[in-house]
Length: 116
Image (cartoon, rainbow, N blue to C red; front, side, top):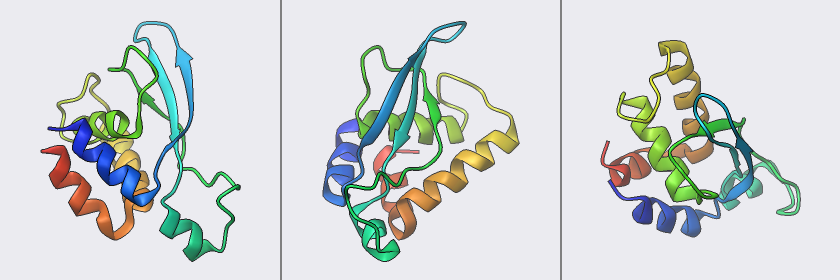
């Protein structure tokens, strides 16, 4: 499991944290939105100045503002039941769908890099 490996892949593909809003409560953490890859921007004919993002998802394991690699690692861990939170199956399915949309044909590469 390596957030660094995932961060290198995200840097390569132009995936970055668009927003990370601090949340407090029973589980403190961040609500995070990741931008789509540079290739997806091109496929959709969008300008890199237009923030095309996936939906907001929590990242509760990070104490400070997380990077894309930290977020992806936690989200892949969540999908296999090893993240800081247990989610209902339908939430896991929605998160997985968003990750597949975000990562496209590189989904498998990112999943292998996550170690999950």
